[in-house]
Amino acid sequence: MLIDLQMAPCTENNLNVERSIHLTLESEMNQEEILWQQKSRIQWLKDGDRNTLFFHQTTINKCRSNRIYKLMDSEGNWLSTPQEIEHHVINFYASIYQSTSPTSNAFDLSFIQKMVTP
Image 1 (tube, rainbow, N blue to C red):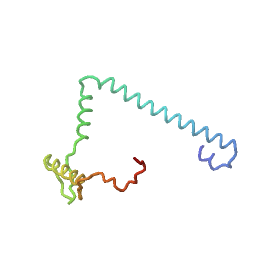
Image 2 (spheres, rainbow, N blue to C red):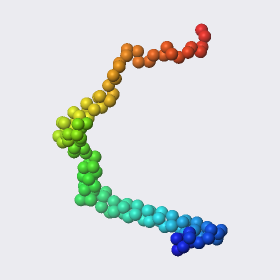
Image 3 (tube, rainbow, N blue to C red):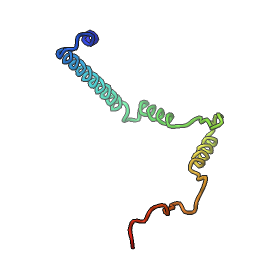
Image 4 (cartoon, one colour):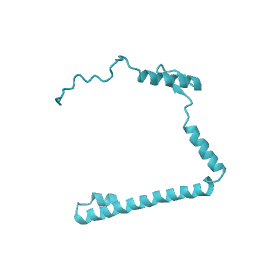
């Protein structure tokens, strides 16, 4: 119906009907989203707040997704032991934040023109 309406001549009535269809569709999609949110809450309230398999599986899956099991270094080698990964990450960030031309005066303000007279 919407495709037929969009192919029809552009009249005020057709535009109003199309707007109405879009608003109805948006409303239906919002209601479906609310339904899925409510279903997930029901599942959590039913199973998740006790020491159940559901609660433990949820926690275990979250922990698994928050781990780094492998890391590729800049040369394309895979690092898989925790010690290798730790060493590589520390060296990587140390090299990023290491200054290549350190100066004793970090704030050289000599280029700022004095505006206040004594």
